[in-house]
Image (cartoon, rainbow, N blue to C red):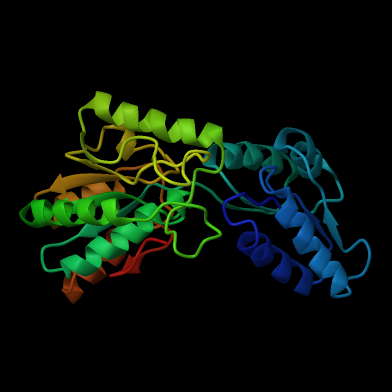
Length: 298
């Protein structure tokens, strides 16, 4: 079981519990960014009385510990959550062994906002999906595909909401957005913001390191909204894993579906509408593994 850093308790438990209940022994290889959480989680299983050797925690980088696990003949099935790049490399390795492989990888998840929606609901849920957990979720909302006739109103409200989020230490419940996980991810997010500017998108808010009390020692990025993004821009096509939302304006439902599906990712999606016909058509036509109705992509 190979797990990521962004949900260091939930995702390991989702994998560990069914694997153990089904009678397997498990090798648990967490992300190298979150070893302490993995150690404590394993200790809890030990304290609960799990037999020795049934749950085995292995710490280390993917290139070292991960490769050894993937290629070891005693490993008979593998579950992975992480980046698409890493997942595809694993897929190639594991296919040669002919053993089962389950993966959840990246996303570039759209919300489609139709004319008849509850716009305040659409704005709040889009904001939570885009900026909650600092955008560091594979199911985070990164594209808002909005019908032209309501786009100005939607954009005005989403910018206002983005500016209202409280940034700070995630251990304080009063804070809504924490930092990027490390300096490398922080720099990646800022790089994509620069790319958005260079490609001609309109930066409406955010776009830089957040400043203020308690933020000086963390890798905090302001919640960022780009407008007039086109489907060919990199910020509309590549996973950023940060608090960055791209707004793409479209003329009608048909164009909205074409834009929403114009992406190599297909993890999650959402539609905001009160018309059952449009909702069911969206469900039929959207090319994503999960979809939501009048709720966040997360």
